[in-house]
Image (cartoon, rainbow, N blue to C red; front, top):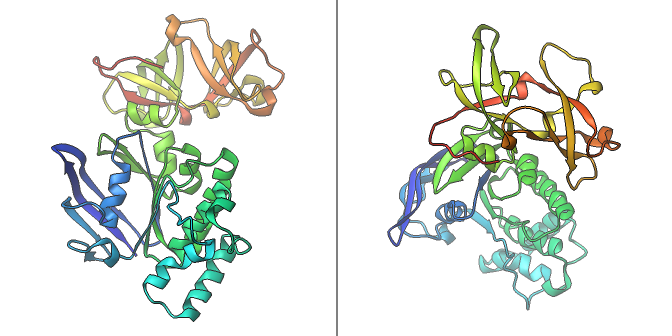
Length: 367
């Protein structure tokens, strides 16, 4: 079922929580909502679920307005961050709670309990109580409780945030597979970039209750619209620079930062002062490939320090520019395992991975 929001806003106690939120999800699409704390992510879900009163704007799905409909009248499922399982009920009883409230026939309850729990691989846990389940197992039970109701729209509010990294990634892939199989339209709130990239068909970035950017994961992470999105999505290398030459017929400009000149394939139409954005994972070592016309060479860098991934991620320093502009974060992978502080390296990065954003005089420089 499609979901459409048009100019949705929400004010609570005189404070604007959401402002002019407009987007449309096609049936079966998964939209991940990213944003810092207080950006309005959870309130956006509550507006769609009908849990907050008097939002402005229009919310509809399948061409039908949700105005005036309470939560129980909407075909919407909501999975909370804290799971909200009933501690005195078994996993099976928790999962079937909604169907029993609807007075669904016993045969229907059994059918969907078997189908959903087998898909989520929790059919062997049905007689256990929540206290006897791990965090990941509790999350699967909470998801199953929603899925047996067969909602047309499923809302998930940071459902994996309390889990360890390995379990988060495993469940994120499982949720995406379930969503694809059942064709549920989904809004998924998270802070985790890995979850967003694994799961999203599109990503919506919120800042201060307003839409900042909406697009595919590639657009959001590789072509951020502004400094906030670049910083929030962990671009890490955001350096002040200046466009020195335009070759727009070739789709390239030459940009200078900290005394180094590189080519960029993504740049503003008119601005000369720019932020030069380069994600760490797009760098590779100079000796790892032959130099090509699409690649920029940054020679003579020195490894300054290794970051926690045992040589896979490091900071390198180059001998130019002001002190605060001398460092780049780079991800090289296992090929760099033998490198250590003080070693010299040549860096390469493709022009297609150098993204320039307009830089204003009032911008505050920070790494």
